[in-house]
Length: 355
Ligand SMILES: [Zn+2]
Image (spheres, protein in one colour):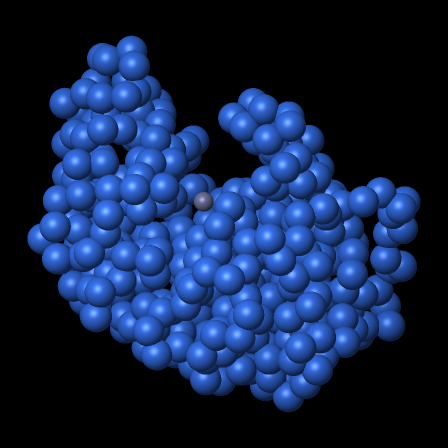
């Protein structure tokens, strides 16, 4: 099904008004100065440009090169895919201005799923974009309209102070401009077509976005994580995101096969940047998923998640050694320890659900 993103902008309800509450406090500036682009990419500050009007925006979440948002521009109008947390909203607006576009030129904000490093800033961003609609998987819709549970969950994980520091508040999205997507639904703006694919596995509320113009796939967390800091030539340290609380390995395998069948020209990862699509990546993700499920079974029954976390760390270290990635232990720990801990939690949550 293909529908225009926006057939009658005049029919929009007024943008909700917010008080003068300060939503964002962490400037990019203090994080700048570190190289995070991939070899051969043109990086200007926190932006990297790709053909067909695609720009990767480093949201600055946690550290440079960690979490991206994407801006797609066609004939003077734009779409955002993923937003980063609320702290990232000023950066996204700056990116838009650097492309010579006004906030009114944005037609849609699409989130791959409602985890806060992807969609925490969606409601706040929408507030600044009077002609945009927010498109979300139906299972994520209620969470963006009323983020109380999202916020409580994040505060439980990070603590209230740390939550505010790294993610900022979560603004409810304007219900009149937020809509649920359907699988294989297409949206067009200025003749450019984006197709939504519902892609469970990482989370039940996950969707990927297929861009017909570029042949690119915006994969959120469904096609794994590959931080540029680990790149060496054509090699990547690519691994699955098995984070809590809805991770499901069988659905992840099916989603990988579905995405691979598209044979995209490139995959735009939220974590982080574009990687060229190669069938070996799909094979590698399938293998690691099987390996990690096996490790989860082996560590089943342990009260402390540390054993499984350590096993996942070893698994990634083995990958980096096999690929001759030149990574020091300090860099590896800085970048991977949190992922390994979260991935262990997700695997354990999946085991508990099925017992
Ligand atoms: Zn996620």
